[in-house]
Length: 206
Image 1 (spheres, rainbow, N blue to C red):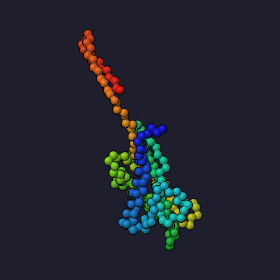
Image 2: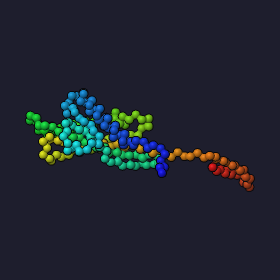
Image 3: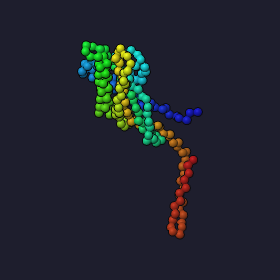
Image 4: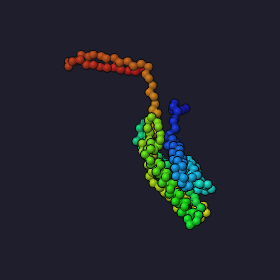
């Protein structure tokens, strides 16, 4: 029989995962509109998509993945989560003129990695644009960038890189609501001793 009598709310890391998708999608589109940089055109922002390195991609892809978390500073009502998010970026380019497709693809990859880093570390997103009355985002930051070496014979000149984004956020567990006592009685006795008067309190609940 269930002993939890309250609905368990959406976890902070679930909200963060979705918010990262919204932020990157909107800001990359905005950068395209401001610059008309063709490297930023047709960039798809996905969440938890799999097998992207094995499918035909029309353009560049930004894929947000939540792989791991650690917890600390725990008490009965809350715990601080250290969440890691992978921002995986896939690009490909054709050879044109005197520029090799592998060079163009790598250049596009580096640009998108730098763009995502800049967006997520911009001060306007220090709380990831959450507007809750009770703040729960404690700290954010990009921790590293890794680029996968392409050793395959790839006619599409595909490239892939990973930006790791760390978020420290507070998770809350609702505390159990104490039951009210039906009655509470206090009796005070005034006793006389050789040293004066002595108060004795007797209390009990029912």
